[in-house]
Image 1 (spheres, rainbow, N blue to C red):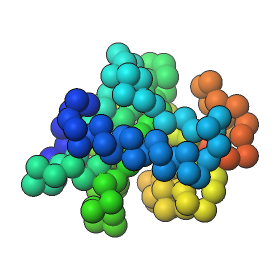
Image 2 (cartoon, rainbow, N blue to C red):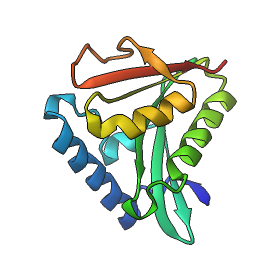
Image 3 (cartoon, rainbow, N blue to C red):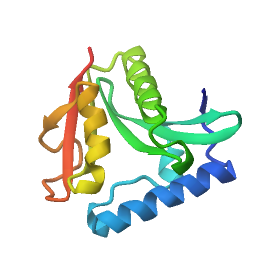
Length: 152
């Protein structure tokens, strides 16, 4: 597995981001979809990674700096061909490690509250994330679950 910084212009990455956004819209109303678009993922406060296996895109993930001590996990997605092969865990471990290297004290995320998001929530729980109140610009939303982990 090869984790690369960037690759936002790759046609495979763009296709996976579109798939991710469309899937979010299938499970959540538009006002509850917080997936970042390509421009937002290319912002100075966001670092985007793509994970490749034998030059095939296997997954993506990003880390957004909320402030100097708090980061947010964004755009976690595994390619369909690589589901249940450890890709999401590898990407999540990488993001947690990068947040620690940046000396963040806390790492948080927003995910869906519907059954379609159970696998994601299970993964985050396995990594020590716990439910929390909305953070940053988020507001209470029955379609969202907020999770956080102290890392510093």
